[in-house]
Length: 472
Image 1 (cartoon, rainbow, N blue to C red):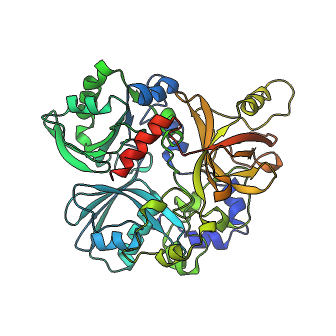
Image 2 (spheres, rainbow, N blue to C red):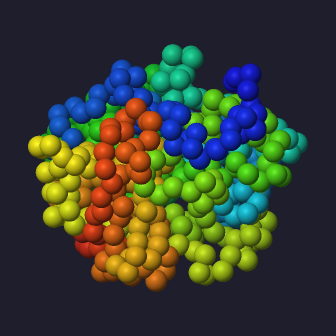
């Protein structure tokens, strides 16, 4: 696995303050942070990001996912055994007609990463997205003596082969079900949430996963990369009468504010002595060693940035019917240590005040960009209650045009996580800002916010979304 002469452990050993290093001196490796490199594969917008956001709420949107997500293919007699040992998920019901949101933890029950895993056959699995998770799976497959074969497929911006193994699209919005039914050959299969089926489009086999982001009958569609253009054109043609819009990267990477996914928490692998050999296996310039941190929350202890599955909304998928890495720690975790994932709806007057500070002689507060306001791969902003008590951490932030609100996802202590609670976010970094090139010189300020349930914000859409997940 090691891609450089220095391992992650060597990087840590020579770095006096790891948090200071990750806050100031690394550039995140993710496709969303790659600017023009990403634009070479998918444009920032096909039309404009506001209308593209509106499409997934009112008509239909086609998300182009072929280039940004790493994949790992796992095949062999011990493949399911490996997933069962590492994942917090129940696997005794993992039949070949379904997928799961796989979550893996360190021995202390803190999240290393998550991804979607498809079961393609009796001993074949496809892991989509989540590079830290995929690294952990590969390392354990090698060192644990599992009888499996692994094939990796890197994102297009770092892929040395010049092409991906599979294309991938997501079709979502109120008209998504009708459009997909019109695009496929034959009858539309009946699919529950996170169930899969094989269909054909223009005679080409397509794997479809029922996976919507906003309460609609959305689907994730994948197949051999050489079929990408044919399948995409067929879906856009079928969707034209419904007002379908292809979505660029600007709108796409704002989707956490629409679906509540707490993407890419910092992998909890930097300190545990039992993971030393893993850190010696990882490269110093890999994803873990470039875990860019930003925001107003600052701790000298990297462990203060770790999260548990409960913190990021995965408590409901933990299954203690099997032994997995971190199970004992999660069983012993007291309720008061379990944070709640919520939305924070930002005060409009405070947002307007920050925009107004960009004019005149100052002070200049940290700019708020739309539709993505978070300016670091791992964003951590301090949240306090009205009395000044620490309440938790705000993470991904931004704006969704159909909702017309600036908001963020946050992990709050239970007493502060009640919808309607008023809290205060510290916005901007201390000391005028870190050395990250995307952070301009600025002064800190505060933003009042109101606690709300995790997105989608609109009640009717949120209820439909939750009902769909309940089918899983």
